[in-house]
Length: 307
Image (tube, rainbow, N blue to C red):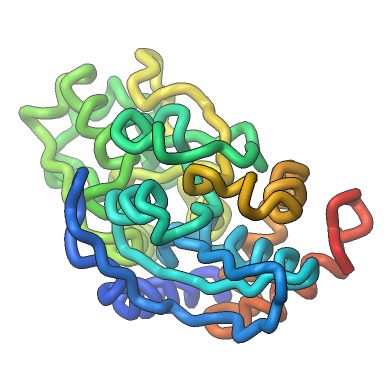
């Protein structure tokens, strides 16, 4: 199992590269262009729904393909739009270029985007209610709390490895660092989720110390020997929900879709199984098969599943 999970790092990198065509700029009010990211080719007669997601953020990747499967089964055509940053995705959602963001963190992590675009977005429901942003180190590292990092910067070469610069996780980490006095002794290195995972993989294979930004739920927490650092000041924020967000007016235009989406709620085991199958067991290009396998295993547990 671990081998397949580590192999998926390369898949995430490839997906991220393919998605570079997905956004022209980031930030509020910027012009946004969307790459096609693939289309289901379905012939639904109830209209076309566009799902926007970041392939490197595997919560959204997994739920996007779950929604594609279910929405097509009730008669919608589904188009998939891939992007590389959260900013253009929220812009596209607010402007109606994207109909649904299938895994948003609007309560804390994406609160700034919601402050900017929230009036043009509607909440379609929460599918998972215990998401967390974390700072993590390898299990073999004898540090257990963020407040121990300041005195140990030399051990970590003064670096915390983050993900995409526009990610809410990065913004929250930037807020956290001065709270613990890390802003003068550490550099937050941002690039991409794939690059962070590559650094983590290299360090743990050599049993070297490293600090990374992670989150839960995320398959990497099981794939690598890592532990969350305690956050006594609560500077990384409280647990929050993962939401389905729609462009303004979505529920009115697509009532059957909105009703189905609002019923979806996953627990840790159900979500973990979905993400593992989509990202690791089946991988890029076989997401639909992964969803079929997940529905075979878990479909009977839900009232909303369409066969």
